[in-house]
Image 1 (tube, one colour):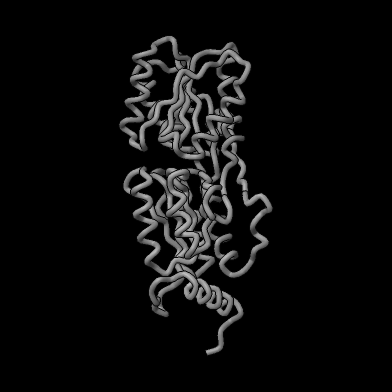
Image 2 (cartoon, helix red, strand yellow; image 1 turned 90 degrees about the vertical axis):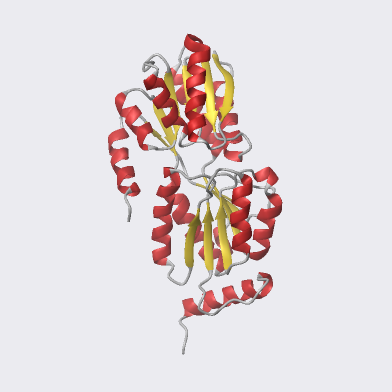
Length: 323
Protein backbone atom coordinates (compact mmCIF):
# COMPACT_ATOMS: atom_id res chain seq x y z
CA UNK A 1 0.00 0.00 0.00
CA UNK A 2 1.41 3.37 -0.98
CA UNK A 3 1.60 5.86 1.93
CA UNK A 4 0.76 9.52 1.59
CA UNK A 5 3.58 11.98 2.26
CA UNK A 6 1.96 12.93 5.62
CA UNK A 7 1.58 9.27 6.67
CA UNK A 8 5.18 8.58 5.75
CA UNK A 9 6.44 11.51 7.81
CA UNK A 10 4.40 10.47 10.85
CA UNK A 11 5.43 6.86 10.47
CA UNK A 12 9.09 7.76 10.23
CA UNK A 13 8.90 10.05 13.25
CA UNK A 14 7.12 7.42 15.29
CA UNK A 15 9.63 4.76 14.29
CA UNK A 16 12.57 6.94 15.32
CA UNK A 17 11.00 7.71 18.68
CA UNK A 18 10.02 4.12 19.27
CA UNK A 19 13.41 2.69 18.37
CA UNK A 20 15.20 5.28 20.48
CA UNK A 21 13.08 5.37 23.61
CA UNK A 22 10.48 2.65 24.00
CA UNK A 23 11.39 -0.05 26.55
CA UNK A 24 9.12 -2.59 24.90
CA UNK A 25 7.79 -3.29 21.38
CA UNK A 26 4.52 -1.66 20.34
CA UNK A 27 1.71 -2.98 18.20
CA UNK A 28 1.24 -1.57 14.72
CA UNK A 29 -2.42 -0.81 15.41
CA UNK A 30 -1.57 1.42 18.38
CA UNK A 31 -1.55 5.08 17.39
CA UNK A 32 1.23 7.34 18.66
CA UNK A 33 -0.01 8.96 21.87
CA UNK A 34 0.13 12.70 22.58
CA UNK A 35 -0.75 13.35 26.23
CA UNK A 36 -1.91 16.55 27.91
CA UNK A 37 -1.38 16.20 31.67
CA UNK A 38 -2.94 18.82 33.93
CA UNK A 39 -2.38 19.68 37.59
CA UNK A 40 -5.86 19.75 39.17
CA UNK A 41 -9.51 19.07 38.19
CA UNK A 42 -11.08 22.42 37.21
CA UNK A 43 -13.35 24.06 34.62
CA UNK A 44 -10.22 25.82 33.38
CA UNK A 45 -9.03 22.50 31.99
CA UNK A 46 -12.48 21.66 30.60
CA UNK A 47 -12.06 24.69 28.36
CA UNK A 48 -8.54 23.50 27.45
CA UNK A 49 -10.07 20.13 26.56
CA UNK A 50 -12.18 21.83 23.89
CA UNK A 51 -8.96 23.01 22.29
CA UNK A 52 -7.59 19.47 22.49
CA UNK A 53 -10.69 18.14 20.80
CA UNK A 54 -10.26 20.54 17.89
CA UNK A 55 -6.59 19.61 17.54
CA UNK A 56 -7.38 15.88 17.76
CA UNK A 57 -9.92 16.21 14.95
CA UNK A 58 -7.21 17.75 12.79
CA UNK A 59 -4.66 15.04 13.72
CA UNK A 60 -6.42 11.70 13.08
CA UNK A 61 -3.13 9.78 12.98
CA UNK A 62 -2.50 10.46 16.69
CA UNK A 63 -4.21 9.37 19.88
CA UNK A 64 -4.71 12.67 21.74
CA UNK A 65 -5.73 12.38 25.40
CA UNK A 66 -6.02 14.58 28.49
CA UNK A 67 -5.01 13.17 31.88
CA UNK A 68 -6.36 14.73 35.09
CA UNK A 69 -5.04 13.70 38.53
CA UNK A 70 -7.64 12.97 41.19
CA UNK A 71 -5.95 15.46 43.49
CA UNK A 72 -3.47 18.29 43.18
CA UNK A 73 -0.22 16.65 44.18
CA UNK A 74 3.13 16.02 42.55
CA UNK A 75 2.84 12.35 43.57
CA UNK A 76 -0.50 11.91 41.79
CA UNK A 77 0.86 13.58 38.68
CA UNK A 78 4.01 11.46 38.82
CA UNK A 79 1.91 8.27 38.82
CA UNK A 80 0.21 9.42 35.63
CA UNK A 81 3.55 10.15 33.98
CA UNK A 82 5.02 6.80 35.02
CA UNK A 83 2.01 5.05 33.48
CA UNK A 84 2.47 7.03 30.27
CA UNK A 85 6.08 5.89 30.02
CA UNK A 86 4.83 2.35 29.45
CA UNK A 87 2.67 3.43 26.52
CA UNK A 88 3.33 4.47 22.92
CA UNK A 89 4.02 8.04 24.01
CA UNK A 90 5.55 10.38 21.42
CA UNK A 91 4.60 13.76 22.89
CA UNK A 92 3.44 15.25 26.18
CA UNK A 93 2.36 18.66 27.41
CA UNK A 94 2.45 18.93 31.20
CA UNK A 95 1.33 21.54 33.71
CA UNK A 96 3.71 20.57 36.54
CA UNK A 97 2.35 20.72 40.09
CA UNK A 98 5.78 21.18 41.64
CA UNK A 99 8.38 21.79 38.92
CA UNK A 100 11.32 22.11 41.30
CA UNK A 101 10.75 18.62 42.66
CA UNK A 102 9.59 17.03 39.40
CA UNK A 103 12.73 17.39 37.30
CA UNK A 104 13.60 13.69 37.44
CA UNK A 105 10.22 12.43 36.18
CA UNK A 106 9.93 15.23 33.61
CA UNK A 107 13.36 14.35 32.24
CA UNK A 108 12.37 10.68 32.05
CA UNK A 109 9.41 11.73 29.91
CA UNK A 110 11.67 13.97 27.82
CA UNK A 111 14.01 11.01 27.16
CA UNK A 112 11.15 9.15 25.53
CA UNK A 113 8.96 11.82 23.96
CA UNK A 114 8.78 15.45 22.92
CA UNK A 115 8.03 17.38 26.13
CA UNK A 116 6.34 20.77 26.41
CA UNK A 117 5.13 22.55 29.54
CA UNK A 118 1.92 24.57 29.76
CA UNK A 119 0.35 26.97 32.28
CA UNK A 120 3.35 26.63 34.62
CA UNK A 121 6.90 26.17 33.37
CA UNK A 122 9.74 23.87 34.46
CA UNK A 123 12.75 25.53 32.79
CA UNK A 124 15.23 23.46 34.80
CA UNK A 125 13.92 20.31 33.10
CA UNK A 126 14.64 19.11 29.56
CA UNK A 127 11.34 20.44 28.24
CA UNK A 128 11.51 21.72 24.67
CA UNK A 129 9.34 24.80 25.18
CA UNK A 130 6.66 26.41 27.33
CA UNK A 131 3.26 27.39 25.95
CA UNK A 132 1.04 29.64 28.02
CA UNK A 133 0.79 32.83 29.99
CA UNK A 134 3.63 35.10 31.01
CA UNK A 135 2.66 34.74 34.64
CA UNK A 136 4.83 37.58 35.93
CA UNK A 137 3.12 39.93 33.47
CA UNK A 138 -0.28 38.48 34.42
CA UNK A 139 0.59 39.18 38.05
CA UNK A 140 1.39 42.77 37.15
CA UNK A 141 -2.00 43.14 35.45
CA UNK A 142 -3.64 41.64 38.51
CA UNK A 143 -1.72 44.08 40.70
CA UNK A 144 -2.96 47.00 38.61
CA UNK A 145 -6.54 45.85 39.22
CA UNK A 146 -5.82 45.75 42.96
CA UNK A 147 -4.44 49.29 42.81
CA UNK A 148 -7.52 50.45 40.90
CA UNK A 149 -9.80 48.84 43.50
CA UNK A 150 -7.82 50.37 46.39
CA UNK A 151 -6.58 53.77 45.18
CA UNK A 152 -5.91 54.86 48.77
CA UNK A 153 -4.21 51.59 49.71
CA UNK A 154 -5.26 48.89 52.16
CA UNK A 155 -4.49 45.42 53.41
CA UNK A 156 -5.04 42.44 51.12
CA UNK A 157 -4.86 38.66 51.38
CA UNK A 158 -3.76 36.37 48.53
CA UNK A 159 -5.16 32.84 48.04
CA UNK A 160 -3.69 30.07 45.87
CA UNK A 161 -3.40 26.28 45.72
CA UNK A 162 0.32 26.03 46.40
CA UNK A 163 3.30 28.35 46.33
CA UNK A 164 5.42 25.48 45.03
CA UNK A 165 3.96 25.98 41.53
CA UNK A 166 5.91 28.26 39.21
CA UNK A 167 2.82 30.13 38.04
CA UNK A 168 1.86 30.98 41.64
CA UNK A 169 5.36 32.24 42.42
CA UNK A 170 5.48 34.30 39.23
CA UNK A 171 2.02 35.84 39.72
CA UNK A 172 2.90 36.90 43.26
CA UNK A 173 6.15 38.41 41.97
CA UNK A 174 4.20 40.40 39.37
CA UNK A 175 1.67 41.60 41.95
CA UNK A 176 4.45 42.76 44.26
CA UNK A 177 6.08 44.65 41.40
CA UNK A 178 2.79 46.37 40.54
CA UNK A 179 2.02 47.49 44.10
CA UNK A 180 5.59 48.44 45.02
CA UNK A 181 5.74 51.93 46.54
CA UNK A 182 1.98 52.06 47.14
CA UNK A 183 -0.02 51.81 50.36
CA UNK A 184 -1.29 48.35 49.43
CA UNK A 185 0.00 45.74 51.88
CA UNK A 186 -0.07 41.96 51.42
CA UNK A 187 -0.87 40.52 54.85
CA UNK A 188 -0.26 36.89 53.88
CA UNK A 189 -0.68 34.20 51.22
CA UNK A 190 -3.07 31.37 52.14
CA UNK A 191 -2.68 28.01 50.37
CA UNK A 192 -5.14 25.13 50.15
CA UNK A 193 -3.40 22.27 48.34
CA UNK A 194 -6.09 22.22 45.65
CA UNK A 195 -8.83 21.48 48.19
CA UNK A 196 -11.74 23.76 47.35
CA UNK A 197 -13.37 23.27 50.76
CA UNK A 198 -10.16 24.46 52.36
CA UNK A 199 -10.03 27.37 49.90
CA UNK A 200 -13.49 28.44 51.12
CA UNK A 201 -12.43 27.95 54.75
CA UNK A 202 -9.31 30.08 54.19
CA UNK A 203 -11.44 32.95 52.92
CA UNK A 204 -13.96 32.59 55.77
CA UNK A 205 -11.19 32.50 58.36
CA UNK A 206 -9.60 35.62 56.91
CA UNK A 207 -12.89 37.54 57.07
CA UNK A 208 -13.43 36.42 60.67
CA UNK A 209 -9.88 36.91 61.90
CA UNK A 210 -9.11 40.26 60.30
CA UNK A 211 -12.56 41.81 60.00
CA UNK A 212 -12.44 45.41 58.77
CA UNK A 213 -8.63 45.31 58.66
CA UNK A 214 -8.79 43.46 55.34
CA UNK A 215 -9.98 45.51 52.36
CA UNK A 216 -9.44 43.08 49.46
CA UNK A 217 -9.18 39.34 48.82
CA UNK A 218 -7.28 38.12 45.77
CA UNK A 219 -7.67 34.67 44.16
CA UNK A 220 -4.71 33.50 42.09
CA UNK A 221 -6.02 30.19 40.72
CA UNK A 222 -9.26 29.49 38.88
CA UNK A 223 -11.18 27.99 41.81
CA UNK A 224 -9.94 30.46 44.47
CA UNK A 225 -12.00 33.44 43.39
CA UNK A 226 -15.36 31.57 43.41
CA UNK A 227 -14.65 30.37 46.95
CA UNK A 228 -13.78 33.92 48.01
CA UNK A 229 -16.97 35.20 46.34
CA UNK A 230 -19.09 32.64 48.20
CA UNK A 231 -17.45 33.44 51.55
CA UNK A 232 -17.88 37.21 51.10
CA UNK A 233 -21.55 36.77 50.09
CA UNK A 234 -22.23 34.49 53.05
CA UNK A 235 -20.65 37.04 55.41
CA UNK A 236 -22.73 39.87 53.93
CA UNK A 237 -19.58 41.83 53.06
CA UNK A 238 -20.32 42.55 49.39
CA UNK A 239 -18.99 45.98 48.59
CA UNK A 240 -17.14 46.19 51.91
CA UNK A 241 -14.46 43.67 50.98
CA UNK A 242 -13.34 43.92 47.38
CA UNK A 243 -12.33 40.93 45.26
CA UNK A 244 -9.94 40.61 42.31
CA UNK A 245 -9.51 37.25 40.60
CA UNK A 246 -7.82 35.07 38.04
CA UNK A 247 -9.46 32.98 35.32
CA UNK A 248 -13.03 32.55 34.19
CA UNK A 249 -15.00 30.31 36.54
CA UNK A 250 -18.75 30.81 36.14
CA UNK A 251 -19.12 32.11 39.71
CA UNK A 252 -16.31 34.57 39.10
CA UNK A 253 -18.11 35.93 36.05
CA UNK A 254 -21.39 36.07 37.95
CA UNK A 255 -19.67 37.99 40.72
CA UNK A 256 -18.40 40.55 38.22
CA UNK A 257 -21.89 40.91 36.74
CA UNK A 258 -23.28 41.49 40.25
CA UNK A 259 -20.61 44.03 41.13
CA UNK A 260 -19.24 41.84 43.95
CA UNK A 261 -15.98 41.12 42.10
CA UNK A 262 -14.04 44.01 40.58
CA UNK A 263 -12.43 42.15 37.68
CA UNK A 264 -10.46 39.05 36.74
CA UNK A 265 -7.36 38.33 34.66
CA UNK A 266 -8.21 35.54 32.23
CA UNK A 267 -5.89 33.30 30.29
CA UNK A 268 -6.78 31.42 27.13
CA UNK A 269 -6.96 27.74 28.15
CA UNK A 270 -8.63 26.83 24.85
CA UNK A 271 -5.48 28.00 23.08
CA UNK A 272 -3.32 26.19 25.64
CA UNK A 273 -4.96 22.94 24.58
CA UNK A 274 -5.12 23.59 20.85
CA UNK A 275 -1.68 25.13 20.37
CA UNK A 276 0.11 22.58 22.56
CA UNK A 277 -1.16 19.59 20.61
CA UNK A 278 -0.73 21.12 17.18
CA UNK A 279 2.80 22.31 17.96
CA UNK A 280 3.75 18.96 19.47
CA UNK A 281 2.61 17.19 16.31
CA UNK A 282 4.66 19.54 14.14
CA UNK A 283 7.72 19.02 16.34
CA UNK A 284 7.33 15.23 16.29
CA UNK A 285 7.15 15.36 12.51
CA UNK A 286 10.47 17.22 12.35
CA UNK A 287 9.54 20.92 12.30
CA UNK A 288 11.95 22.62 14.70
CA UNK A 289 11.00 26.12 13.52
CA UNK A 290 8.06 26.14 15.93
CA UNK A 291 10.44 26.54 18.92
CA UNK A 292 11.22 30.24 19.63
CA UNK A 293 14.77 31.23 20.52
CA UNK A 294 13.73 31.78 24.14
CA UNK A 295 11.68 28.54 24.17
CA UNK A 296 8.56 30.44 25.24
CA UNK A 297 5.31 30.74 23.26
CA UNK A 298 3.35 33.34 25.19
CA UNK A 299 -0.44 33.44 24.89
CA UNK A 300 -1.73 36.84 26.06
CA UNK A 301 -4.18 37.42 28.91
CA UNK A 302 -7.34 39.55 28.93
CA UNK A 303 -9.05 41.66 31.58
CA UNK A 304 -12.71 40.88 32.21
CA UNK A 305 -14.69 43.53 34.09
CA UNK A 306 -18.29 44.84 34.06
CA UNK A 307 -17.79 46.34 30.60
CA UNK A 308 -17.28 43.01 28.80
CA UNK A 309 -18.33 40.26 31.20
CA UNK A 310 -21.69 39.36 29.62
CA UNK A 311 -20.31 38.69 26.17
CA UNK A 312 -17.34 36.79 27.58
CA UNK A 313 -19.55 34.70 29.90
CA UNK A 314 -21.69 33.60 26.96
CA UNK A 315 -18.60 32.41 25.10
CA UNK A 316 -17.38 30.45 28.12
CA UNK A 317 -20.76 28.77 28.69
CA UNK A 318 -20.66 27.51 25.12
CA UNK A 319 -17.15 26.09 25.65
CA UNK A 320 -18.19 24.29 28.84
CA UNK A 321 -21.07 22.49 27.17
CA UNK A 322 -20.41 18.82 26.61
CA UNK A 323 -19.50 18.08 23.02
